[in-house]
Amino acid sequence: MKKVHYVVLLCLPFLGQAQTVQVRIAGNNYPVGFADTSLSTTNQQRIASDLTIVFSPVSSFEQSKGREVETGVFQPDSSMSMLSSDKKREGIFIIDQGNNKSVRIDKVASDNYLQAFAFLKAHSNAVLKASEFVKLLNSANLLAQPIQVLRDLLYAELPLTQEADEGVREYITEMQRNKFFGISALNFALKRLPDAGNVEVLVMELFMVDKTDPSDPSNFGTFLIDFHNGKWGFGRSP
Image (cartoon, rainbow, N blue to C red; front, top):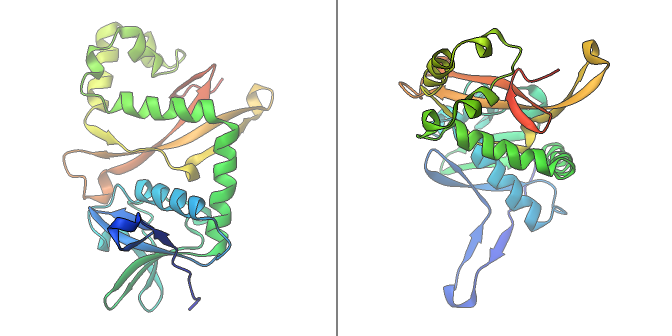
């Protein structure tokens, strides 16, 4: 197995102890090992923070584990983590060997993250609005918003948005059965639309789970939302 490099962050002198970069899974912190020893501490922390979001849907460390590729080394589970493709899972491993429970990041995975961070920086305004969009969907006061705010969550050409206000509110009420998770750097991309003059639209995978039983993988799913005309929405692609 590859040796990994655990970065130690110096704490304030009066604390008298060190702390490793960690990812939080199901309420507990686990160390993250990086194969690329040249990776800056800042980027290691950013990756660990993003992985905390990636694994936020899982309800236990066991649930984060997918296929076992070596003894005690697992790919992330694809049915509950926010890693929906082989590309996103590449180089990310869950380690469960004896008393060692941790996450291993090979260089291919940290390189993927660095590319994703650069992509997000180039689309920083849309990324900020994506966070606001998810916050709005999870708001307990969503239905109290003006009807136009609710319609703006949807694309005007969808049949639903031609309905009366009550129909829109009923749809939003149904949506509120779900919890929508935060955004991961790995879940943004550009989508080319051949039917619209090959225009490229920024898209994001939006992950959600039915609140009635969030531990059941069958209640976990995704939407692809689009950023068009300065707004995120369902089916907003031109």
